[in-house]
Image 1 (cartoon, rainbow, N blue to C red):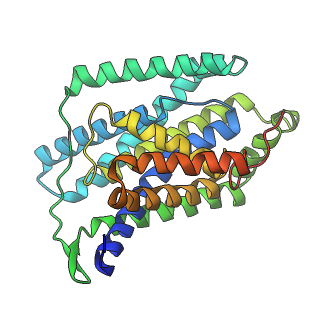
Image 2 (cartoon, rainbow, N blue to C red):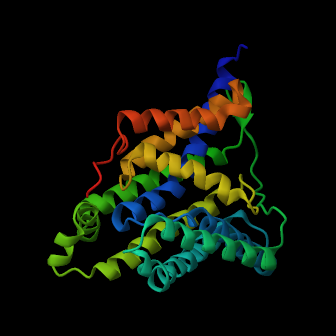
Length: 297
């Protein structure tokens, strides 16, 4: 099967857009596990909840103040703030009791959160897929047309990656978080309140995911079940990139997003299987991920 250059470039654009969605979702998951050693299976479900909340806020602003695509900005901001607060509450009330527990118990707790949040969503919003329609004209791209919003998505992903990297490497609090990845005991010995830091990190990870839900609502419908599809790919991204590494998560997201996009052209039913072949290959070659460090004992 032969494809022209234009169709390949469009597929590349689609892959990069998907990569940024995976990065924005997986970066918080990687940060939470790298710092707190908690595998939050409900991460994508919280992302889904943020999408529903953003949609509701957007509809409220549109109904009360007139139609405008710009209402997506305050809607996303408010939903992100709400999910940050919810994430902090979940860590303080539930996750904090899991630090000394085994992994299966952590997974059971976060899976229970999936069921609870899913039922709440079903009661409030129903089972229909929801999407924000933006009045954006297609843009000419070589000999075809593309949605210019894809470039916005890619730009947001790159900006967030740069912002997270700067925060973790050039701020005092970010450096403390990075130090906690390698030695919590050392950070605690310096007089830093580990509990408060864990609460903030969990809230930050959830907030980044919540923000991405608003960014992607114009191109990705929110519906029940989408969280389970995404969390599997996010775990693949985090493992390939290395737990706790923002750079690794970014690079792995591009690999997974682009490979998946082109795999759909070649083998639609096996696109996800190809991703897991890459995952297994990385685990055999470098079990701690491309940019990760060997797990502490």
